[in-house]
Each structure stands twice: as structure tokens, then as C-alpha cells.
Image 1 (cartoon, rainbow, N blue to C red):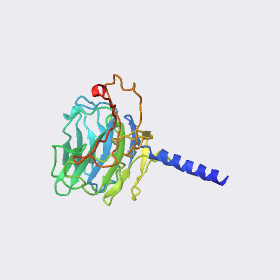
Image 2 (image 1 turned 90 degrees about the vertical axis):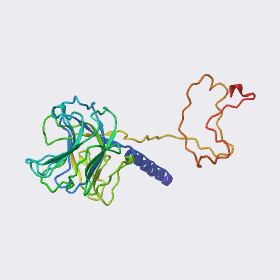
Image 3 (image 1 turned 30 degrees about the vertical axis):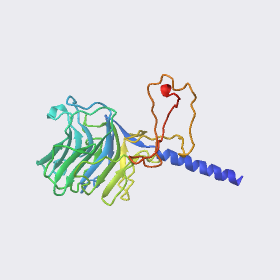
Image 4 (image 1 turned 60 degrees about the horizontal axis):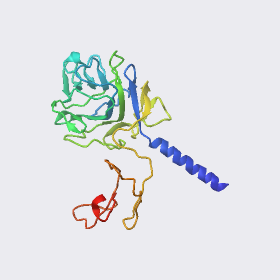
Length: 305
């Protein structure tokens, strides 16, 4: 009986680990969904990065703002934001990163592209470097538009919203966001490969929001040590994958000596495509001195090989 209890406990542990290993993202309805990160979280932020997936095509004909992160202010002296622009502004479909230094002085930069496909994941990093100023990176590629403005957002009593723009009509994101990270250092100054794995905390981290916690459905849990938890107002956590293919399946391992699988003599007749995943156990390069077959049919003579 004791062994049965041990087995049950092990099974529950495995199932629990499996449930939390699945990636969840935050899905916004485009009507009134947003996350409130509070008033202090953006103070001193020099990097804002996240993965986002539009729920609709965004292009030069788009008539709405689609905000990713915005802190709205009246007057505008402490406002900043990262938002897609409507066609009425003359920058329809472009992603704008902007900040104010006072009530009337606006600094803004734009993405190169004004066309974003629905249901496709993109990575964005908005930077305010202490000497190089404002930069924008899309999928790790530095955009042409820059600004020499270099102060980060200052303290404010107004909240930072994710996916919404201070209850303004037609200013809500239709789409999904994952792995939102705010940092107090400018993490990127040149092209980089966006991180596919779960965002993790570093010494520069202000907050990390992965949206995987299912215990608190209305809380955006900050997985850093800073406990900058946000309040979820409407968005739901759904299963999705950003850029990594999760394969929960068995595979075959070959020892390189005498292991093989026999598919028989007829299975390969008339095929036109062979595909598979494979993982070498040793480096394969120009110095390889033997064959390492993935699939083969050997014949003598070799007419049907």
C-alpha cells in the first residue's frame, strides 16, 4: 500500500509539472481588455520587450490604435507608449514608440513596416539608451527610425496599461501578448536573436510577466523577485506557443553500432517526400569518416536503391 501511495504522489507531481510546463499567453478581445501594471512599474524603464500576435491584420488602412503598452497622462509630460497607429495619423499600421519630456515635447520613432499579419507572432524591443537614445527592434532587427532623446520614464501616479489606452474607445489591442519584460537597462543596441524560451529575471529586470500562473486568473504575476504583479481586466490566459515547437512525444534513440528499423520492402514505393526530426549524438562535420544514414534502401544492383 505504501508503494501505491508513492506511485500516486509521483504521478500527481508529473501531471502538475506537465500542466505548468505548457505555455500560456494573454489574449485580448480588442473591446475593453487590459492589464493594469500599476503606477510605479515603468519608472526608469529603458527596455520594454514582449512577444505579440495581432488578432486582425494591421496595415496602412487600419482605423484604430492598437496599444501594446501605454501610460496615459493629462497633461502629457510623463506619458509614454508602444502602439500601432491608425491611418488618420498618416502612419497607419506602423508601430510607434513614443515618450514626452514635458506637456508638449514629444519624441517618437516608428517601425519600418506598416503591415502585420493576423495570428503571426512578432517580437518587439523598445529601447531608451542613456547615450544613444531611442531605438526600436522588430524580431531582433534594428529599425531605421531613432531619436537622441535618452531620459527614461519618470515617476507618475498614473498606471501603465498593457493592451489598452486608459479607457479610450477604439484603443484596445485585438490579439495576444506573452513574455512581457521591463528592464532598467538598455539591453540591446544592435541586431539580436529574440529569446524563444521563457523570459527570466536578471539584475536589470523590473518585471517579467509570462502569464502562465493559473491559480490567480485575474492577476498578472511578476515572476521576478520584484513582485510587480498586475491586475488583469478581461484578457484570458490561453494555450499557445510563441516561437518554439513543443514536442511532447517519444522518439527512437540509435546507438550507432547495430540499431535500425525495418519498414519492409513496399513502404517506400512511389514516395515523393521524406521528412523527420533528428538529433545527432556526435558532431557531424567535414571530418566525418563514415556514413551516418537516416533512411536507406540498399539494393544489388543499385537500380532501386
